[in-house]
Image (tube, rainbow, N blue to C red):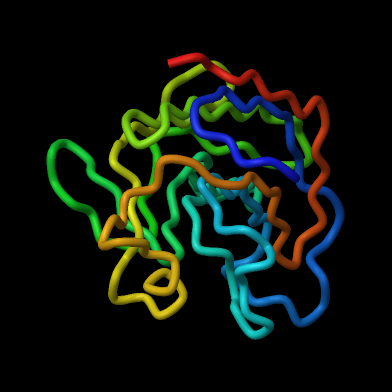
Length: 177
């Protein structure tokens, strides 16, 4: 999106369709995401794999195995969960698996640098706080200003890996804190 956001509720519906692009990596099967608190497109380098951001990872099932959605991935970032700094790159949510090409409603409730909630089909599946830049990540390090690594706002983008994904009913409600 062209403007930065800090406190808001983002709601959309998504579904995976068709087959993965030939040659796509196995981990990218039915894999997409919502990037929040993201760096600006202008600040990214040409060879950068992902924007420094907080990713609400959207995954689809393969028809037989369990696979949660509404997960968290942290390219160039960290978060705090249950009072502890989490440096692990991806954290699974408590969502159920959604197989086939069904529409799934995803919501993200964001309160600046405090509480962030991932909500799938009306159920809170993950909560955390204090999103921050990872000072050991080269791309994130360039974004730290005056020693403050906390993320209070950023851009929003929709991600697609190598599997076709459709989005509809994309809505944003800015919140006044």
